[in-house]
Amino acid sequence: MSKHNNSVPLEYSTEENDLKIFGFWVFLGAEIVLFATLFTVYFVLVDRTGSGPIGADLFELKPLLIETFLLLTSSFTIGLGVHAMRLGRVKPMIFFYVITLLLGAGFVATEVDEFLHFIHEGATIQTSAFTSSLFTLLGTHGAHVSFGLLWGTAIIIQVVRHGINARTANKAFIFSLYWHFLDVVWIFLFSFIYLKGMM
Image (cartoon, rainbow, N blue to C red; front, top):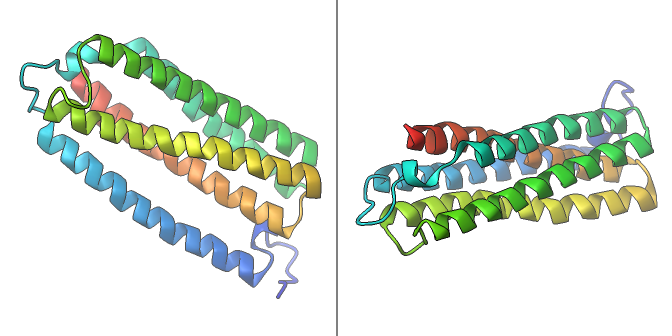
């Protein structure tokens, strides 16, 4: 059932779309619980390093700043993509979504390189309780970003094929919520894992 209010964005234009967005907010609530649990486990185990390296031995500022720049910039570009979508401009929307995914891919590549550095420094998931919780937390976030690259690609393909309509707008908007959520999680990782670990 359509809503005939022109002030309602296209992604909210049907009751089904409304319900899907609400359902996704519920899903994000579950994701918050997941990450809160992983953060809690990390904080409990952070000092249990055994004979392995500690955060100050592993964390480097340069890759951290690159990852932060890439992910926060991608949050800005997806916002521009949603804005273009609401204006009905297909090409700019696709452009900004592609840029978002390229920035996300750069983030994943930098994180993989960072993990290889951790391993080179003697930190694996089995080294200590600290490294186990660290790899699990960072890896879960990285896996979410990697999944987002596939999901975002599928949405771009649908917009190319079908244009901007109530269905594709709804999917693209829900994806933008997911992407912003990952950026918020990264801010917590940046602040409470990396920066705190460097001190």
